[in-house]
Amino acid sequence: MATIRGNSNGNNLFGTSASDNIFGLAGDDFLFGNAGNDTMDGGAGDDELNGGTGNDHMTGGLGDDVLSGAAGNDNITGGVGSDNLIGGAGNDTLNGAKDDDVLSGGLGKDILIGGEGTDVMTGGLGDDVFRFVPGKQTPTGVVNADIITDFEQIAGAGGDVLQLPTGSSIDFSFQIVSMGVSSWFIQYSRNAGADFGFVVLNGLTTAPDIEFV
Image 1: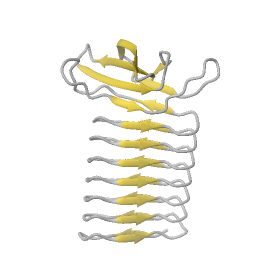
Image 2: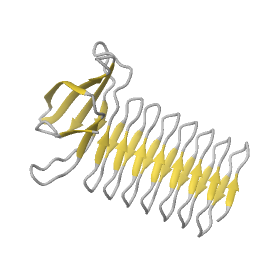
Image 3: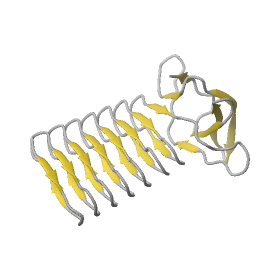
Image 4: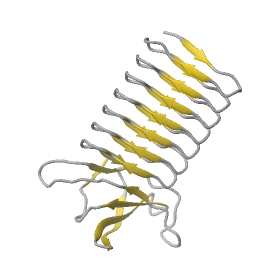
């Protein structure tokens, strides 16, 4: 196992075939994990992280980052900034954390967590879980809704899952049809209506099943 650290400049950091710890620190860095179960942190700056093969743990840190897990069951967190998270092949967990992020699960049974901000999520092939937490929004004015681009639900046969925290309530849920394309809009809240969240499920024609966890 190697520990590889950058500096305040923009660095290109490459892991070994073992399980490495790679830290970009400040600057716009490129981190490549190679083989092994790597731990990678971009630090401050607009970074690009690629885990390579293995079950990697990746954090973007501060900045607008691109994080790709590639092959393996990866855990990917965007951090602060507008990030692009790509799971790749494997059962991945993607967490956008703060700000407006794009999450793509890829192949496998993935968990996608938008976090704060207005996020766009695509599960990809496999039965995926989309998990949400109400934020500090109001149900009036401009609605900042998270979007799921490919939610698939098969009656009696599984499919994707929509999860909300225990104690949340569904305020209303309805179908939207525009230009012949159906979507489903949901408003949910928590903490006696103090926190609200909104999600649009593109392509869905019936109300989704919701799990409270």
